[in-house]
Image (cartoon, rainbow, N blue to C red):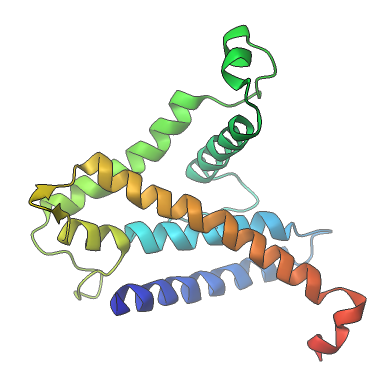
Length: 194
């Protein structure tokens, strides 16, 4: 677990540098949407921590990233369904549906990404990173220790566990970062900045 913690820290540090470079690049623009930036930062960091692959989600800003967009649309749909007990009836009657959400396509984008990485990792005997040392991302640990009570976890189960980690960690961290900067910039907290 210590290796996973160290790997997650390294991912966050690497992506923080990328985020700061992007903020510097966007600095001349009128406004910088920190909530959008933090969303991209946390998604990129947790995807890298989970799957050991870094997607250029921050770097492509202001353009859309297909994985990021699909992820956000599906989370928005889940949020809508959580808040509306009649969502199934509305879907049947085609009432109040969000425009631009193609559930099968968006799900396929996420599944294809995860499945490709899991299959690539399953083919390799020893999982290593670019430097030749052992990989310590969440996926590698699950693949290494996926034999639970002598039952091997399926690729789908491993994908679901890993994606659930990303979902749980991404928005909570994004909101925490946004709230932190909101609080720090309030007039009564100016002494913190000095």
